[in-house]
Length: 418
Image 1 (spheres, rainbow, N blue to C red):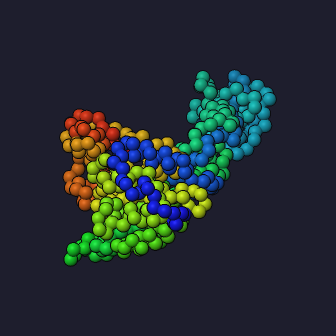
Image 2 (tube, rainbow, N blue to C red):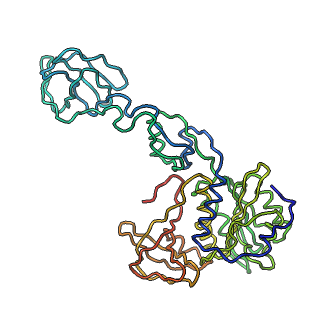
Image 3 (cartoon, helix red, strand yellow):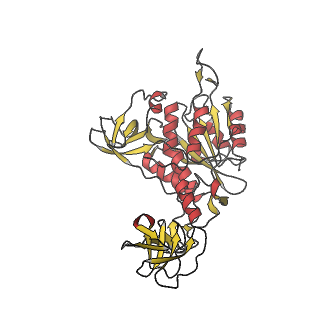
């Protein structure tokens, strides 16, 4: 990491706040440009990762004609003489004579020469003969019915979940090439913070140190307990040392607090001392306005990122969903997150020329979003009962019945939203 460069001019004069949508596009683009290296992982170790190359089939699916029922593979019009039995996992001999049959199990290979499969429940057998009327629709799966060999089933950038893992196994893969998981760290700033017990005597309990790593893991990051440091002393040397150390192993370092320019807000001078460039420096969004994202170059030539989250807890989460989520999507080689929409059940005020991210609870069956209460910047009660944020664009307010974008709160890696 460059730590001896002269102060960066971009850090001296803060530009106007970026628009919320512009900021998200900007951080996604820099994340994608710095997409993480690819690695080969055993299937059981890929849940929550991202495909680094298209998923293709190694054979036709199915690879051979497969019975879809328990019954009889028959040749000719019948009645049929029983000449054998076929179980799943075996290779049957061909049926070479008319009016012969072999008993067959679901999933077993249909013998060459068979003209139909008769369901066991629709058959009769006596004296070594089987009778019945096969259905007109074939009762077996033809080779290539699901996919042909080398067919692309999923593109690179697809999140890996249990369904993808199962499909890869069906295709004959033992490993997948995926993007390495982002490594993240957290620095908690603020001498006023307590790490245990209730708030007292002018000091408040740190809510972000325990919770931000959990949010980051839901975005697919690796965060070890040793990667969470703080509260860091409110001095510039302590901030510089802590951030320099955190960037040694992390692709992304999140910080909490210190994003403004108060007497003990040292994040901006720290970024200047480390030779960072701003990707975004403040965003026209409420809450969470003083969020930022900066970029540094590591000794290996790869980009490292610092996400400055405001100290107010809800504002910090707004910064996570606004900047960190699209950055991590880019780093993992995924598409820019597409925001679902919902209909407002109640009015939501606008915030003038800023985007308003308003906490809402979703009724997914009805497609409705209802604002929650207790949503001050320093409050977490509303967040604990919410599903995401309704996006109220600048210069507008949300009226009942309006369709608005929703920024969902992250689920576990690989989990699909309902």
